[in-house]
Length: 137
Image 1 (cartoon, rainbow, N blue to C red):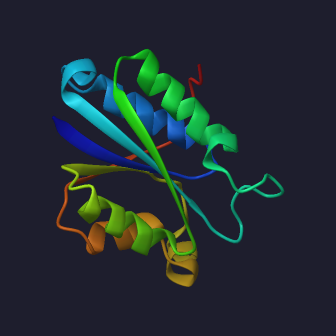
Image 2: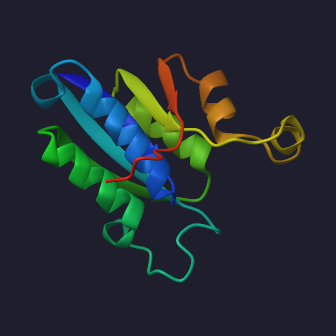
Image 3: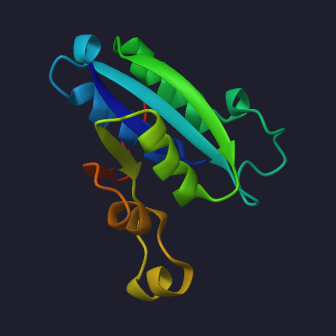
């Protein structure tokens, strides 16, 4: 079984792009186990109670994966996204990490950092970066 970690944020579009990538892999319904991870930070989920089952992006990604026969587990964590992504990747012994990238200017990356960039630089796991899903289901 090929295990992928899919850290999602509040963006349904990015979460669906990540899920679409995974379901497009050969024999995904037989060979892939997906682990969805949502990390609650100070700015995630607004006023929604902190339960991963109430996060729409998580629900949409999970539904897409399950509709395509991919085995899915969902994890939640809190505080610092990069540390939690890296920790879950190691603890779950995943084969790869599928991140949802967002467009940012070079200055924006320098000033605020980039979760995607920091994960790529701090893991020895293969990392795939998807974009936005402009063809939402």
